[in-house]
Image 1 (cartoon, rainbow, N blue to C red):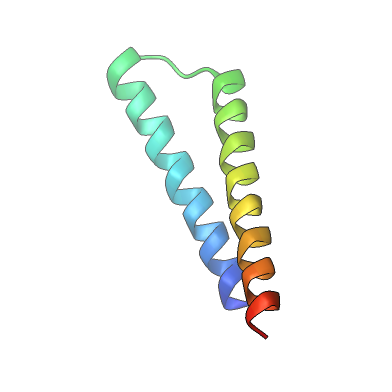
Image 2 (cartoon, one colour):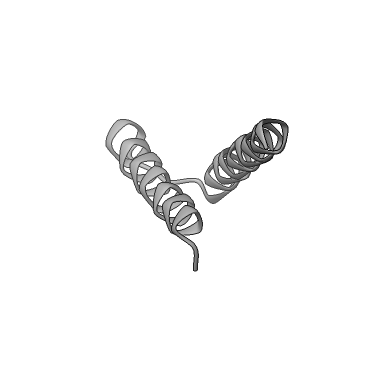
Length: 61
């Protein structure tokens, strides 16, 4: 695994745990559908940033 992939995986795990614990703390219940939407949006954002970084690196090279 590359270092960048390790950072993305750890970021996803940290964001998921934060979402789950905050949801439980403030609402007292956990909804898998809402977490799935959160996870999809988080991963889409991370993918978008990865494509942006790749494009900028290609222009600079």
